[in-house]
Amino acid sequence: MKTPFPLAAILIALVLSRAEAKDPVSEVLNANYGEVIFVRQESNGSLNVLEASITCDGWERIVLTGGSAASLFLRDGDHEFQAYSGMPYEPNSEPTACSSAGLRISVRKGKRVYIEVIPQSADEKLKFHWELKPKKG
Image (cartoon, rainbow, N blue to C red; front, side, top):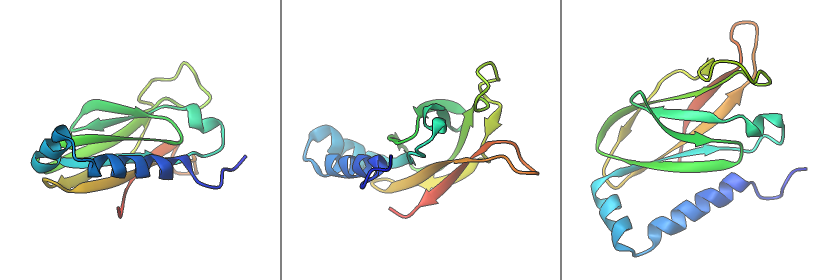
């Protein structure tokens, strides 16, 4: 069943409204770090429960399921992100069996970067994999 307003859009609105709040912790984070926000749309299918682990510079940081969003506050500089998961419908597959290409993003103090986490079906060249796609925010 499709919802009239996607859950990810609501999550983005919550993140944006949180950043506008005048709380001292947010002000310090926004002044000293850049924010990278990962958004995974709900696919309205069984892939929603498949967890995608997102790494930053080779370290696991967050896990997303369909219809969720999460953010990281990072220092200025270039950071590389990659998404991993096991094979869909194969519960005993390696947790890193499916991955995305690495995505290098330049993070700047006080700025936000949005990245979409998109499941990609297998085709004749590639098995199931992930795509990390920068999004205008």
